[in-house]
Figure 1 (spheres, helix red, strand yellow):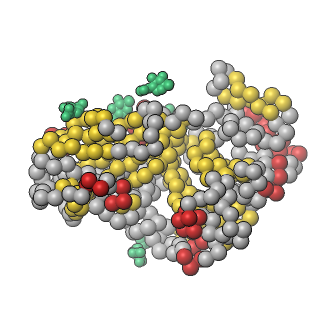
Figure 2: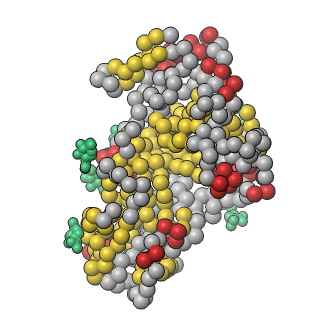
Figure 3: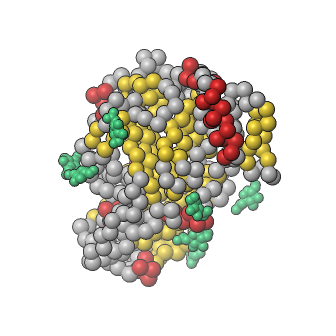
Length: 399
Ligand SMILES: *[C@@H]1O[C@H](CO)[C@@H](O)[C@H](O)[C@H]1NC(C)=O
Ligand SMILES: *[C@@H]1O[C@H](CO)[C@@H](O)[C@H](O)[C@H]1NC(C)=O
Ligand SMILES: *[C@@H]1O[C@H](CO)[C@@H](O)[C@H](O)[C@H]1NC(C)=O
Ligand SMILES: *[C@@H]1O[C@H](CO)[C@@H](O)[C@H](O)[C@H]1NC(C)=O
Ligand SMILES: *[C@@H]1O[C@H](CO)[C@@H](O)[C@H](O)[C@H]1NC(C)=O
Ligand SMILES: *[C@@H]1O[C@H](CO)[C@@H](O)[C@H](O)[C@H]1NC(C)=O
Ligand SMILES: *[C@@H]1O[C@H](CO)[C@@H](O)[C@H](O)[C@H]1NC(C)=O
């Protein structure tokens, strides 16, 4: 699969005016406690739903529950091969754009001391590939993963595909509706999924939904930048302010004010309002000159993004090179732009689901999600597919 990389840089200066507070206009949100038996509210006042919307599988529990602070991280759902090779969560939602977050953990829940290999798709496109052995940390403590996707068929499909005979596993699944214009979707469109490969808040600890009481309307969580700084950034120092920042929590990306209240800059610079002009160098290529004061004035949020095409290394390096004053940065997000895979024509999907009902096709046949997609997984057992219309959709050619 060809992958383009989009990369976002956010930057700041500060303002003294409060930003207007309006209610967030997108209200569909599901927080599903996979394997959980009861609805619950966590210590951050998020309401979790008892496990539902899944096609099959069994509920499980991590082997050392005391390691996890949140109930939703301790319980999980796994899909043994007897439940079929392909299983899904199908959550009915209004069409639109969504933030999808999963929490995946193993913690030897099955006593086999072997992490499973499996793929995860969203809306019929493979987005995550888990391969055994997982890193020690992830196996024991689990990991959150997230992405942005469009939903245009009335339901969000998150599917799991067993590699060999391993049991896919998931501990929580969240779907939060976001602004349809976010992340410049007019150019990336509904035909791409943005898979998150890092979301840093400079000069800060981990924060956001599930970690602290700080809000982020999209549900994004932000991780500290410190471990990603290069050794020659020794002169970098963290700064923070309680001032209000203009242009935060605004359409379409709703970056929270907290993101802009901490930053990393260079030692010896005490004046947050000073003029700052710097060049942004990505993978050794000078891509832009930023003059924050000229762009937005003082005490206001500024963001900028850049797409790296044909990324050939696994490391993305970002350098801020001073021109006037010293550079400053508050946040940085990195996404893989994954083109949406082909899917089966909608009429045939409906017909096949009806057939599944009337024939009472057993779980082990894996007749879940799209009959033919993702294209690099096996189709439903007993079904053969091919592409049509100049390779823009899939149809069933044989049963
Ligand atoms: C959990 O809440 C949902 C929505 O409010 C409700 O439909 C469901 O019956 C509840 N489930 C349990 C197990 O209480
Ligand atoms: C988050 O806020 C709620 C309600 O204000 C409070 O009860 C809770 O203690 C807070 N949690 C943390 C971890 O600060
Ligand atoms: C918790 O959430 C409920 C609605 O989900 C809200 O009514 C209540 O005010 C919230 N409590 C706190 C302390 O934020
Ligand atoms: C969004 O993408 C379009 C087309 O690539 C570009 O012209 C526009 O400047 C972008 N908008 C923002 C806010 O970056
Ligand atoms: C994406 O899909 C939504 C909902 O189906 C639609 O309203 C919107 O116009 C689409 N956007 C683009 C860029 O095609
Ligand atoms: C870096 O690129 C920007 C815009 O492309 C340009 O204005 C600037 O002069 C360049 N910097 C250097 C040091 O060449
Ligand atoms: C990316 O690779 C494709 C195919 O190898 C090539 O056609 C295209 O020109 C490359 N794009 C850039 C920006 O290098």
